[in-house]
Amino acid sequence: MKKPKHRGYFRGILCLVLTLSLGASPVAHHSPVSASPISGTSVGWGAGTSGQLGISTLNGSTTPVPVSDINDVTAISGGSSYTLALKADGTVWGWGSNLYGQLGSVNSPGTINPVQVSGLSNITAVRAGGSHGLALKDGTVWTWGRNTYGQLGNGTTSAGKNPPAQVSGLSNIIAIAAGGSHSLALKNDGTVWAWGYNYYGQLGNDTTTDSSTPLQVTGLTGIFTAISASSSGSMALKSDGTVWAWGYNYYGQLGNGTTTNSKIPVQVNGLTNAVAISTGSYHSLALKSDGAVSAWGRNTFGQLGNGNKVNSSSITGVINLSNVAAISAGGDHSMALKLDGSVWTWGDNTYGQLGNGTFTGSTSPLHVTNLTNVIAISAGTSHSFGLIPSGQTPPAGTPSTTALTSSANPSTPGQSVTFTTTVSAVPPATGTPAGTVTFKDGTITLAGVALN
Image 1 (cartoon, rainbow, N blue to C red):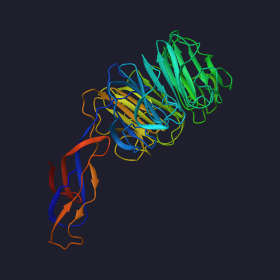
Image 2 (cartoon, rainbow, N blue to C red):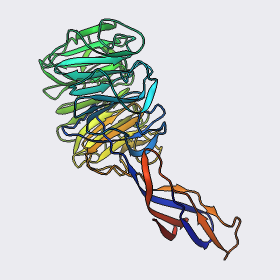
Image 3 (cartoon, rainbow, N blue to C red):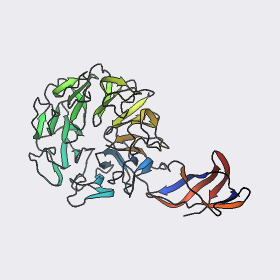
């Protein structure tokens, strides 16, 4: 903790701008839509009231901060109020809410720091749903957490906190997806399987009956290469670059020009050459082969990134965005990772999930503050994550402004006074602050004082 001082003449209202570099423990994470073949350090931002940022506090952050006590992360997946991460050694870790056992523990109510999900090893992919988790292991699927609607796929609707267990009857699985209360799996033969809640037809079997065991999605022909699950809907990417969707459609998130729910897959109109897909709570994203991003569905917060807040049942283009390598749709916000390693966000920013140092939402993409060389991204309901290479210094945050204490208050023109302020590290940062304290009178810089 340090107290910089500056002697000067009081004139008007002053503020203190602090540009700091704070030490922090190395961290890592992983993501549902974009994952990395190499391990790295995870940084998160947005809501933290349930500990879902994993930064040793229940505080949120409007700029990226490193996750505590975890490294060698290869993928991260943000859920509703919790987060799951996959490490290079094949173990799964979680933090945030554990109300339904979504962290894999039957005892803990939740945690602000990463804890290992017990009973899982040699995992190659992980997904966080509303309150349940999925993991992929040697072509088999493992689930845990809430099971009110059979979303764990174990043939029951058991209450309470359910530890990890294998989904029976599934093999040769190459991809998984977790929705609000339902689950999806993609087999190596290109077929899609679903189980759990089905009130809106999100299981795609032409019924609205829940299922506690996996059922094949009907009406899909050809080979499918990717899947994504939203709060109450599902989506699949076909090998020919077309996209198909089913389930809830109140906001037009199925992209077929209507707002009518569908119990069977329908083609997203006008979308071709798609190479990746991601579904938010009620909106959808698709990455095209040319690096452009298409969006449709709910747009109350500008999460479609097309410059307005009008819902759309047809695809629209995200503006001012190109050369995109990966996408991720959150609750009511969206993320994109560009080929240059920069991260861009748009939509709801109530909790700072856009990562630009403010709480102001945006209808077009904004650059995430102080984040470079990112190799993977993930959007949770109201929080976001990026994965940076191991060894890269995590972002130190943006300059902050605070009040000063004056030795004379009130003071008179020409009177010499001393201004002081206290600078200290805020968790998860540790150690002694370093950097520069700049004293300003409005926009006029009076002096700069080094913290040493």
